Image (cartoon, rainbow, N blue to C red):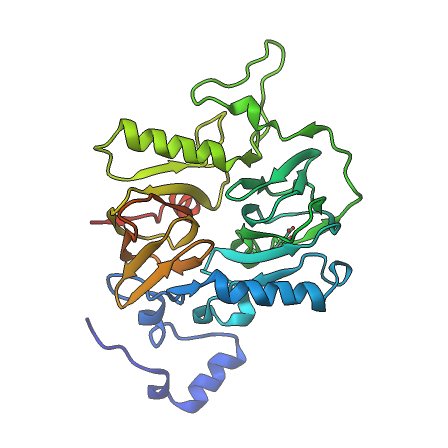
Length: 345
Ligand code: GTQ
């Protein structure tokens, strides 16, 4: 590949004349924006062990009252992007949120989409568009773009959950903003029972459910059962993995980020092909090694890590006796819509 001219090759007064008219020569920067063969990601492989994070999050509970935080969150920031950017990858935002007994995080709605993966505690709930969703370990709760949401806690112990948002994308598009609201009236207790069974959906004669986000809570007990059933009934399947989808359409449950749950059978090593999308792994149960070029992360309960795209990764269950369960977030839905999604074998 030809070596291109640098900025310094150009006479100073020429460069000044360009700058004067808001013009930039492409060739000195061409290889940076179009590197040969594959991208040069800013996203670094990073792991955030829960053991290190938890005491600092609980300390934030002492240092900052909820009224002074609105959302009491420690952001899992990728140093490759600069910590101040508050990004795990180019598209994914991750935050660990703490709610103490009796606290309330007031209602708002915003353009970025969020999901919550519940990490610990009982008795908290998120109310999304009037639907009250209890928060228990491993549950996934959607708070999609534009829907009102607030968090409350009637339990006795701290509750912690992982927030996954497409905030970096929506912010980059200069489309990120929030609207404050009043406490919602609860109109329905979590309606996930309407979608108990794959393949059949509620179909009332007079109204079809045409909401863009019909299912807001995916209880872990159901997802875990689906994975275990899959493992038992399809022993030949390559990856015991289920995607969180919109039960009305079967497509990704949100438009920008995709979510799935993976079960590693006891002793299983699963080699994933290099894909163009960055990925986040969060350990729900058990423990697993995440191995990629030059890095190995050992994930145990509630640990979270992020890896860039275009890299092969192997997931290994560290136990020979017990399954390991991992929650996965990636930006494949966005990449597919934009036509840049790739799998390299
Ligand atoms: O709970 O609504 O981690 O609005 C970042 C922004 C959580 C939330 C975050 C948010 C929220």
